[in-house]
Image 1 (cartoon, one colour):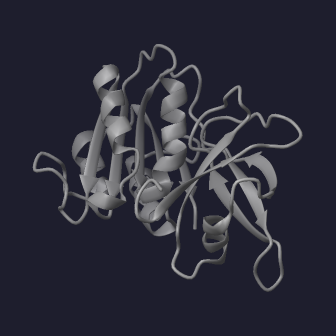
Image 2 (cartoon, rainbow, N blue to C red; image 1 turned 90 degrees about the vertical axis):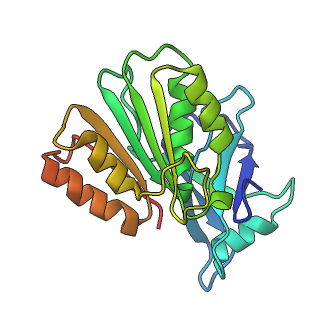
Length: 222
């Protein structure tokens, strides 16, 4: 359990290693629902490893068939998996400042991108704005703080939307932080991940700033 609602799941492909790019996701076909299999998508939380394991994370949705089933799986259970899929990936090498914006479990693919990115030297500035509904529901927070302390190129801006964070932390919505820091600028690559209700207003805002379809990246998980 990463938080009261978010759980980590580690799966090991039985046949061969599954290569993927940080930010991509796999599809699990679950034996539940009126017409099984029920297909659900989950992003990788960690980059490729020699162990072949895939580290996924999901939030327990009240009454959710998919998350309810995954919460009950035990070590040794087998799942049907397909993928990887998706284009929510950072360019390598990184030649432009990167601004990452995530809310709640939207941080999962971004954490994977960051862990891979900082395996080597980074010459551009990387900024993460990460919003959580409450302090207890944010995940990877300590790791992200340590990452920011180790790498001068990385700036971490957490915000807790109900105001329960530390006194020095932001309480503003992610969009307000983005607007206050980069108002009128276009010299960065934005990557935004969260629910559709969270992503759509930011997509509109960035479009109004002049970002074209290929000049920003968006990922939704609902």
